[in-house]
Amino acid sequence: MGLFSAKAIVLRTINLSETDKLVILFTEQYGKIKCAAKAARKVKSRFGAALEPLSFISVIYFGKEKQEIFRLNHSDVIRSFHWLREDFSKFYTAIYFNELMDNVIQEGQRSPECFQFLLDAFEALKDTTQLETLRRLFEIRIMALSGFGPRLNQCVACPRVPEGNILGFSFRMGGIVCEKCLRKTRVELNIRAGTLNYVKKLINMDIRHCQRLKIPKSMEKEIENVTHRLVSYNLGRELRSYPFIKQMAAL
Ligand SMILES: [Zn+2]
Image (cartoon, rainbow, N blue to C red; front, side, top):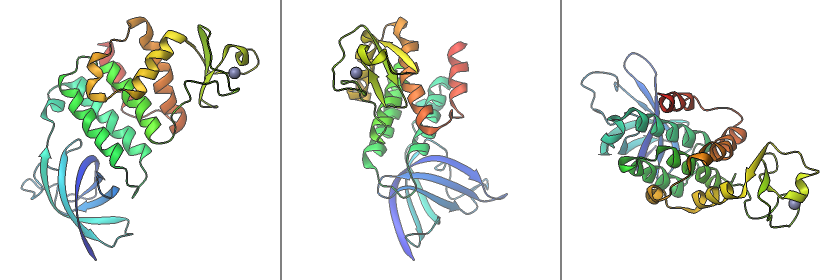
């Protein structure tokens, strides 16, 4: 039996019984883990509000190293990101980020870079008015961080650097297709060179400076077609929280 101490973001919780909760945590030190939290559903739970999804907490848990479910012993809130709970659009965006992270991170896989990125994303949500841009940046970056980053500077079917105004984008081949190859290659999407430049900016930009990037309205849909479809293509399905975001945006 080992006792572990870690910093963690609460990805989601599942009710195990009338009193107990299963908590899925993304820890900085040990990657994604599952912990059973005894009596966490009781009104006077010793875990307090620490086990709410999106909370950044410190935890102590125990179990065997390769065990599937650990036992949560103690938790303290480090940051609750209260601004996420005061604005529905921001809240659902954060839930979407959480769900996306939950899907790309394997259990027990350490990824301090992804951990920091998720924290930065919650921070970035605080002051932003550009939620759409933030979501696009999160999508493309999380794909890049988990090894699904598309090739954007060179054609995926030949070594050429495309120069045309209209290019192809292939999810299957993982990047852009030049104007020549486009004549003989089936692609899922056409993309304007100007739009591609914004996607390139998004993939490299610090999420905390996202506010500085002003994406023209006319390009928003095209960028979503690249970054969001890249996510659903690689995960093989649509995420549950995404339709809520679309509904919010339509209001
Ligand atoms: Zn080509």
